[in-house]
Length: 285
Image (cartoon, rainbow, N blue to C red; front, side, top):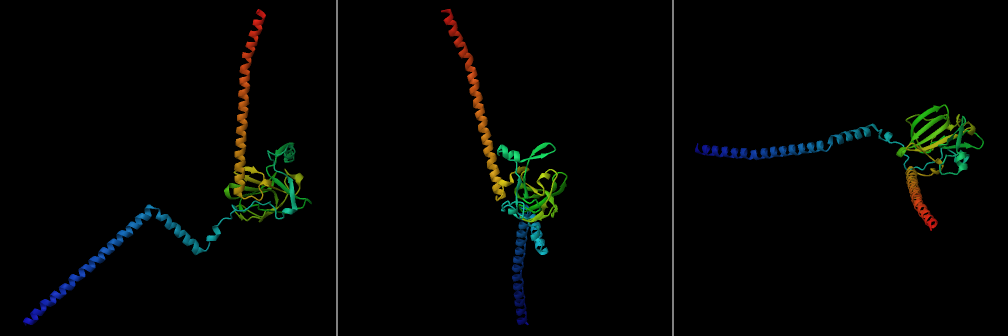
């Protein structure tokens, strides 16, 4: 009996020790979970503060694009590294029949670049191309771009406009058999129509009128060929700066001449008075 009683307490003490050893493990698990929750909350707060929700949406959009397999379709046709080409497929088959009106050209060249219509002369804002035999030819995109306008004009004929990088626009007038529509992307050299006729350029026969516009201002196409958009725009900026500097220098020269003239005029009355005085003294003597 005593042995049994002695054994019971020892059994209880052993069990008690086991129970006591379990508590530290549960306490460590609770601490770990609490720490993980704090870290997770901190990460969520940081993402919200730095626009993480936008990143999540972007990531979702990219994932949906990859899953659909249409990510490449949204890539636009670029023209930033292309060199501007003549708006025809066969450059050797055409020639210029009406030049761009250049303000710096000679009087004869400027006269040849005028368009006569209904007893009025207007400056040609582009370059007109035609074949020597007067036959039709295919008109192609001078640069890759997006079709921004297609219309039939009563004077200019069928017109197509292409939008390119850096705000550059190319215009194709007097077209026939237009093969593009607004919103479509066109690669450089792709056929957009054929040479046709226009009322304002009826004396040119079958031809294409080609324009380049930089920020809405017409640019001489003949001095733009074989240049990239960046090179062309750099040249235009330099030319504008040189013209502004020349105008300023001319203005300063004119101002100096006027000042010299005014000084000369101011000195004349004094000299006249002195001369009159000398004559008076001579008379009195």
